[in-house]
Image (tube, rainbow, N blue to C red; front, side, top):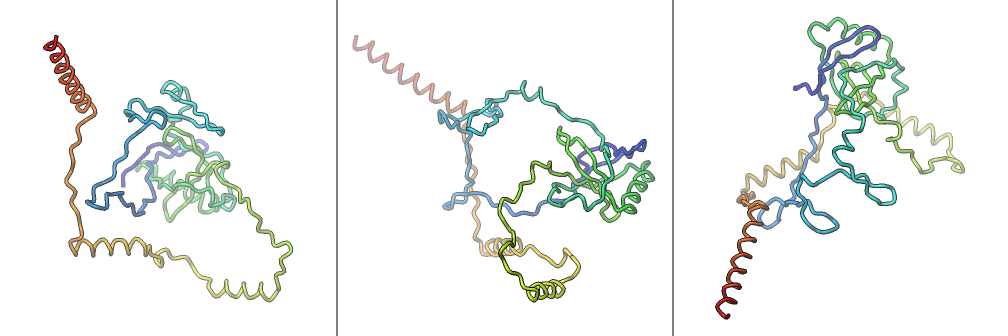
Length: 265
């Protein structure tokens, strides 16, 4: 594992130097878009929607689209004026009951590893969280933005869980009220019995991504059957070369035309 951030957890007068690691990794399958005939990858160009011209990366700016469809262009100077957080502190704001944090707010998970000389203070914080059954609500600067997060104990490690901002959680805008719907007592009891019948403990090892396994098996069969393509790489001239060639061709044509006119004269 490679640390992606270094800083310290501060609570009261205690500071715990830590390193931050991503706790999860995506195994989601991704497919390339290819030409069905020869397997060549599909490429995309950066084209302006107004004039249809290809835009160089250096000429691309950031734009904020308003609700009525107007575009506000922000240049580097505008972006530099925005508040930027670059601190190296995970600041504990308060310790709250874990049931007050709805899992819907969870975003991304990280592990915190203490420096060797901070094992005692790290263990002190871990045991305090474990024995009080609380989580630490913290603020931290990640990727130049301050975000809210929580610290909780996962096995013997303190995990940092970033949280969504409250306005990022959508409200369910549909009605699930049982008003006017008759629910019989026998039906409720039967539902309870079904829950008890299927009750058990969660073991992630019992579940498997059968879609990913099927895709890998399909790909292996195609490889074994020789159903693969090796597209030849096509070296494309840069825009500068293309422009130069076009300019030379125009120059030759113009020279010929001029020479013809001179001879006629």
